[in-house]
Image (cartoon, rainbow, N blue to C red; front, side, top):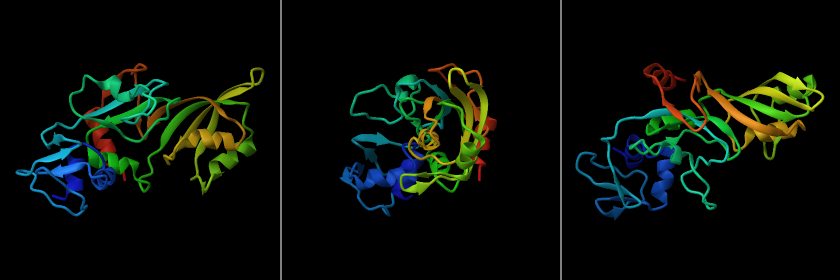
Length: 238
């Protein structure tokens, strides 16, 4: 088995991320550093380590939905020593990682798993999985502004893919609106940047769904395991 597939099968990271780990010289096979992405291993006899920790295929696959609070990062390490979402799932013995990211100020639905292949599938650009957000924005977007939002906006050096936006509630006196926003891209802080581009900056942002997966009754800071049907749904996405 190729080394990057093995790392993904162990639930450590997606195949693409596994390649980065290999190139960073963090992987050892039988005590020797591996740098070749084409390296093949015998999964039954070879010993594989990442950062000095042995990995293996014996872990069961775990799929959970976390209701992320604001003020948590979704990366493993942080230079400012801020709390991580992994701190909220510390009772799960398997090594799990978030599928995609939510920025520090954003709350809501985050899927975590040790299924590297599913992580790769759901984060690859060719798989257009809708992500639904509820955003409190400054001001009240006009029909023309929302049309521009839906057609795609030029942000920095790229144009966003078509998206959806609708006003759920508005308060003209307090000058804000609550909008439901759906995108299928996953660029860094994209919803915030898109709202800023139409001059309605986000005041608060919460993700409420990824495809058909929702939080259900999961409270902020808590998680639930995905049902068998939900896992099959995610694996069946095209």
